[in-house]
Length: 231
Image (cartoon, rainbow, N blue to C red; front, side, top):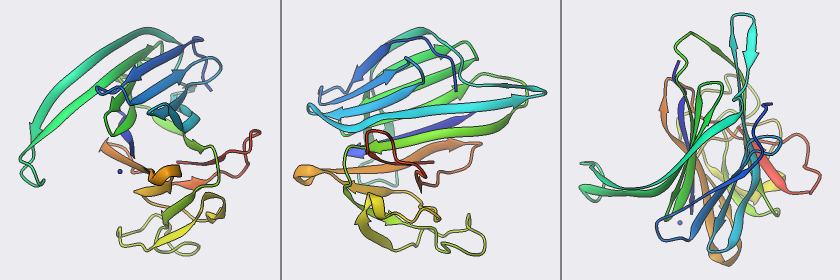
């Protein structure tokens, strides 16, 4: 099984080793911090302002009678990537692909790959496990510091019928994050309006042999009263 999910945060448990690991974008404005003190959490800063508060990353696999998570973080690597690729369907034929990259290797054969672009941040989980495994559960959180306005596209049929059936033709509800329907799923992209005209766009991409992402309001608020939703 190969889990190859890339979660993009664009600007327009597990037992882990304690530590903070940082990676920055080529222009230095986007900084991603991964903390592994008690659980793996990532946070995103833009130009010195915290955009995404520490948000949990977790996954648990079932193999036979055993269940395991990410494991402990061992080797860590950091590098800068300056690349480009062709795209005949975009407004430019050649697309620049520049980012800072952080790789955290765990004892359970996972790689936590984190990227910091000039206009966004992303992470994905990669496993080299060759044996068949079942995903028991996964935690993907997006925690914001306040009850910001948001543009939320719900699954077409919110509360009846097949809730995983949608056509990406949903209308966007313009409401504060706290007003998300707790019993409904949202699809991506979902936009959060930050101060000073900034917007955070939450989406996923590069999904390979894995389901796409739905978003749901967290059932319980965090102790620090931040607004959060999760996969």
